[in-house]
Amino acid sequence: MKQLLIILFLSITFTLSSQQFSSEVFHDGFMVTTEKDTIKGDLKYDLDANILTVIHQGKTKSFSSHKVFYFEIFDKILNNYRQFYSIPYTVNVGYKIPVFFELVYEGKLSLMAREHIVSQTVNSSSAYWGGGTGTQLVIRYSYFFMDSNGTITYFTGRKKELLSFMAKKQSDIKKFIKDNKLDTDEMADLVRITAFYNSI
Image (cartoon, rainbow, N blue to C red):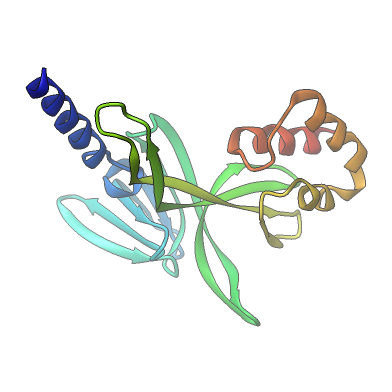
């Protein structure tokens, strides 16, 4: 029995340690450079460094966000198509640089996101191991709204802030969130809210 538990524990540990994230692997896709050249191949992105690595015709090349206009991948981890744009964004007062944003929903008010791999503390209540805490890596998203003028605003996830973005239709949005029991810091719910806002 003890050996079985050890094998099970090692199996779980291996599964957690071997977990892959989308930013760690290459995906089939294409990119469009700022010079309007289209390059197809295997793509791997690094949003923290704003670097896109492309394998094309057997050659590997890296592009900074300054050289990329757009790229699209079929994410083999999420089994879904994803679109990214390089857009100038203010990182310091009066200073903008091109930054990669994932386009989550496009409309008069568009929803965009940037992902980060972070370490999260996990509590264990296992009777065999006596409980305790550990850490695991998880994906967290930062959300941004872009209006029809191209202005990008960081969104903290708070409902009050969201309603201020959608001030002209605030009462409708507030009712929609309440009726559908939506969370303003969850991507799927934010997509529904943004789509509803654009439809009314």
